[in-house]
Amino acid sequence: MSRFVVDASVALAWCFPDEDAPVAHTVATMLRHGDTALVTTFWPHEVVNALLVGEKRRRISASLAATFLSELSALPIVIVPCSTVEVFSRIQLLAREYGLTPYDAAYLDLAKVNGLPLATLDDDLIRASGKAGVALL
Image 1 (cartoon, rainbow, N blue to C red):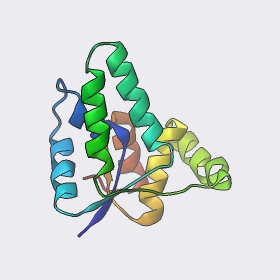
Image 2 (tube, one colour):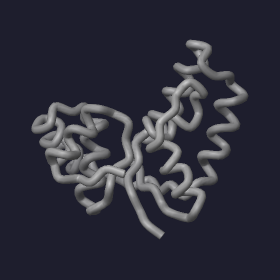
Image 3 (cartoon, rainbow, N blue to C red):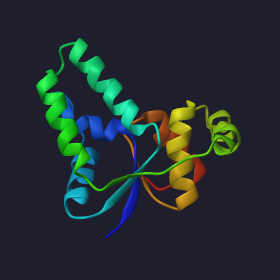
Image 4 (spheres, rainbow, N blue to C red):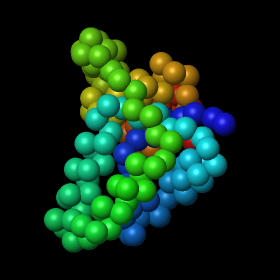
């Protein structure tokens, strides 16, 4: 069994029927086979926000979002706490160094600190991972 960091972009690709990403399929398969994903403390909020925006824009229905959240809750996804000191120090520095949002820098930090690969569909985060020496799934 392996562990890796996953950002919201990958999880959301599972829900929206108009998105098709090989990385998202790979991650879903890994989780179904018992691997564990680590996520940031704000990850659930980010997922719910995107689902609500998707509903508002009529990309998905409320019932599909509810089903998705129920299925997502059953996966081996672990929320890793992050202190204010870590956000104000390491994450802020990573955001500044690589031109990332603090949210994306938090995923990068989580992968870097734990020595784990990162699964993302975000182009800026992919570029920063390469520069920071963080492996991608």
